[in-house]
Length: 147
Image (cartoon, rainbow, N blue to C red; front, side, top):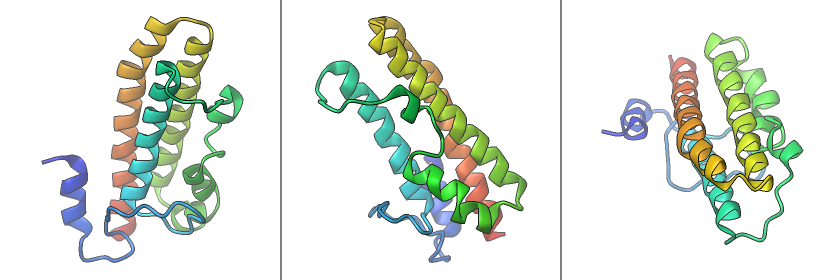
């Protein structure tokens, strides 16, 4: 059973934490775990598409590397901090989220320098590992918030 499926079963009685398949990130006032994980999965796809040349999006390394520039980061430093900042799990989730963005910036940097093999390797290893840590830390945060 996938971590997300397990966590969904754990929180299915709480409408604020219940996972769903309809992400609503615009305005992001109180995201659920599925929205957070889907958003960062989309980041991986966005990086891959840029590296494959199938995207015309011009990603800025400086912006991509900042953990407070995405919708989740804005929530983390705003309403998320107000709601969960007192929990130790909040700081862990915030730190790993920052690592994920730094890693994404590193992947994009290598791509823009023409180091395609290294960029792909980073995406498959370091980014993937950091993304898994990100998922786990947000699951812990939402679990602690429910407790």
